[in-house]
Image 1 (cartoon, rainbow, N blue to C red):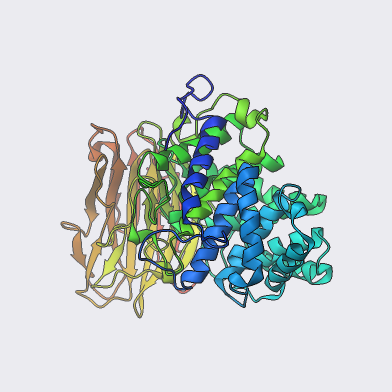
Image 2: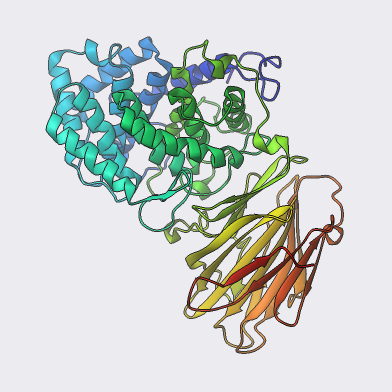
Length: 573
């Protein structure tokens, strides 16, 4: 991909400016054009893989997701091609939008693109094409959605149809129904769970916030803008901390093949004026992520986005991932809706949070602890509240980072016997203080075994403690740490009842296991034992003293209730 020269005056951290974003969008669009069918209604990208929805739906996905990119770019020449494809698609080529079907997802992208470019595309269509398109989209406002972020696709379609005066009553019902539904999943602090349970990941930004905030903004609905915009702004306070200094987003959750779509909520905050971030910080974070992927093989020799993370990578795919799925990355180009003279484009880049200072940040809603270090630019996420067993291991590991990925050898896990599972996670709180922070949870392993866990973090160092209850005496317990990766150092040291990371339950009483861990990219870090000292007392308390003399005592207990299971006391030495 050919990009302009870096501009290190305006963008000292990434070198990227609006011109780089425009060039990237143009290159991505140009690369997809040869794969359109003759009538331009479908885009079939090369490769043997199909999603579980089949080739026809995958071709519609290719049209819809690349149309979204053309809409954000406001490329009139490209939009003319998509107008031809729309006319053909709604004349019988596209599959109908049915209950819980993939075309419902793509209908939302098409409707959003039409709404954003109405004078350039929709208003120039023949009346007959508009009628057929509205009828095809109309099925989306009555189709049953999966009970998750899908509830927002009828909202997005309904917003467009209501604007053009088609099926106004059904559209209004779809909007009200979808927005009411997500209230069940808002957990506070700017965070949603993606459906029932505790599914926290990037869908917060590229779906749960994106669609309602854009709908409110486009509808010029001040009440909804205050509600959803306020939530977005609060979310971005945490979200900005999920990016490493190299631009890498956190490697956690599903649909990671959307890659730099992780930047969509950053641009959304700037576009709607609902952000706590300075303009130069917004662009630095977004440009960093775009650059990170473009420099690491996200685009192949044909200029197409591959199914993977850096390059092709089956590990980050799901059954719904088809050849065109990565083009939800188009959402990253939302920022191009901002004029060239907007301050988010003209301001000098400012450092990202990870570049400003070491930080340990408790995120209460998902019960996460974010641990970042300025010296190496790494961000670590200690997960004590997110799970979705359908997509393990990207939800259920104890920790994730911007430089590692979940391994097949069950990194960051407590393995009781031969069972590495972690289900029924109960969050037990998170907090900051004593020069660091802590987060705790309880989870189940198999039938009858409970593990109560806490991690204390400061700098790059972690103290991990796990109280295992309900396992038979003699059951082996293994604690694992960070997965190995080139360029980073992963350490795990036993402290209590661990020998070469392997130990056993000693008796019928709950058994405590404690270890030190560290993930760092520093070439010569201080010895781990010099960074912290840990000792246990006769009451099961864990005394932690950091190398600057700050101290904390932690005690874990097992019980049926949630309260009182973890006690963190900063007054102890």
